Amino acid sequence: MSRRVPPLPKVLVVEDDPKTAATLRLYLERSGFAVLEARDGAAGLRLAREGGPDLLVLDVMLPGIDGLSLARAMRAESEVPIVFLTARTTEDDKIQGLAIGADDYVTKPFSPRELVARIRAVLRRTRPLPGEARGSIRTRTMVLDLDRHEATVRGRPVDLPPAEFALLAALARSPERAFSRSELVTRAFGDGYDGLERTIDAHVMRLRRKVEQPGKPRLLVTVFGVGYKLADPPS
Amino acid sequence: MSRRVPPLPKVLVVEDDPKTAATLRLYLERSGFAVLEARDGAAGLRLAREGGPDLLVLDVMLPGIDGLSLARAMRAESEVPIVFLTARTTEDDKIQGLAIGADDYVTKPFSPRELVARIRAVLRRTRPLPGEARGSIRTRTMVLDLDRHEATVRGRPVDLPPAEFALLAALARSPERAFSRSELVTRAFGDGYDGLERTIDAHVMRLRRKVEQPGKPRLLVTVFGVGYKLADPPS
DNA sequence: TTGTTTCGTCAAAACGCCGTCACAACGGAC
DNA sequence: GTCCGTTGTGACGGCGTTTTGACGAAACAA
Image (cartoon, rainbow over all chains, first blue to last red; front, side, top):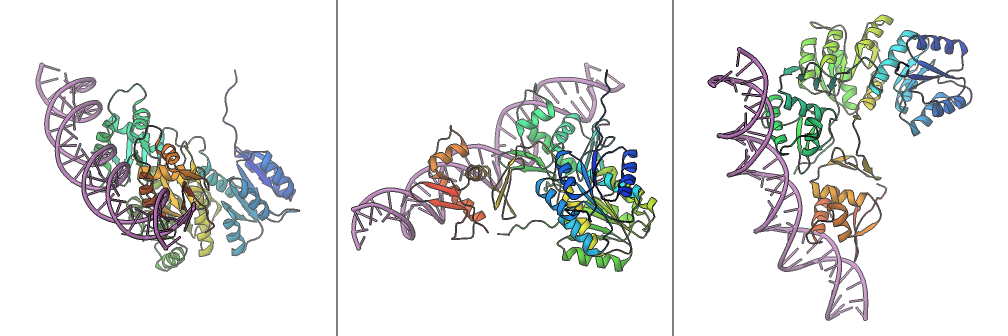
């Protein structure tokens, strides 16, 4: 009987200095990451393509292809998160690095613990880390706690009967996406539901009374001829 | 008739020092952000909830509620990106800030340009939303997001009623190819449609009003004796 | 050029979608 | 059983959208 363990997030370190590389490996592995290593730009590019890393830590000054070029090359073909780790500390260097599409820019000498914290912060945005947000759905302005069956909108708790909660959750699971009424019926109440699609309208109306300012729907938006979507209000 | 412009990303700056706040506002606005300001934690929390910011820049040392508490409070109810901006520079301070769920941690004295670059980097990660995708159709100048039912032409969002959206999508699925009106009817509205082919003309006219410069159709081009096609000229 | 076909535009009419209301049906609490 | 909150339904009115027909302008063929 094999226990299923969530795969460790994989970090590719491209760094020519063996000592720095060893330090990084130590701290990263200790923090629960799998580590790939490359000593120069060409090897880095190959491993980045073939190793399927979840994040890249790049030194800028490298033998062969330098870090910036490597980052540009990767950006051209993937969205993999990139953190620069470098001795080049001028404002322009940092700005250039970030402008290329890097997610963070850390200067040497660096604190390994801080670097790990930053890597975590970047990955938090990129892919959900274990232990976070399991039984809840979050949007920019809303939290739906599925376990407690509690909704919070703009910091205010709202209590919702089951059907309205289910509908809101159905929408919130994919914010910004427009759903037809029949999709919503399925997502919220399941397949075996027999009822008019227009029932959705009634629920939407009642939800709006509770979470919107009268007359100005900003969260629960009608998409004419299609259905409804949940918008994160730009105002 | 009011012209629709893409809304500026909104940054809330919570900072008690007026001079720093003014500098931030200057640089942020110059870089294309809308800026909200608060002088203390309580006001910050209120604005964060009600102002709908896309990102928070938080000083840690604040009168009343401090920045860390403010960040924790926000994290409890939303996923809004947070960047700390603070004079507290120890390793532990940074790690704590990032552990709370901040996306970046910048220490004073800081370079405004670097801060802006970092804010951009964070927003680059934050903007796209997850969700099962029905996909989107992209041409050189146009994006049709089928999930959101949103059209973007030359970077400007255009809102389209269902028939016009369907017609545009029918054309965009094969750019440069000319379709007869009856092909378009089928591709856009399906087989069971009964209506005059000339209805297409009406839709094309309204589409042109929304996406073309008056008098010069460059995207929705008439192919005399055949029908219409979608052209993709380099802007 | 003239004649013919095709297209662009307009405005009104027809259509269908949505918000809302009131009430009926349902179900749990007691 | 009653009470009360929740959910489902049908109907109505308003309004945005779609369709249509007509007319003149433009494109084409001879």
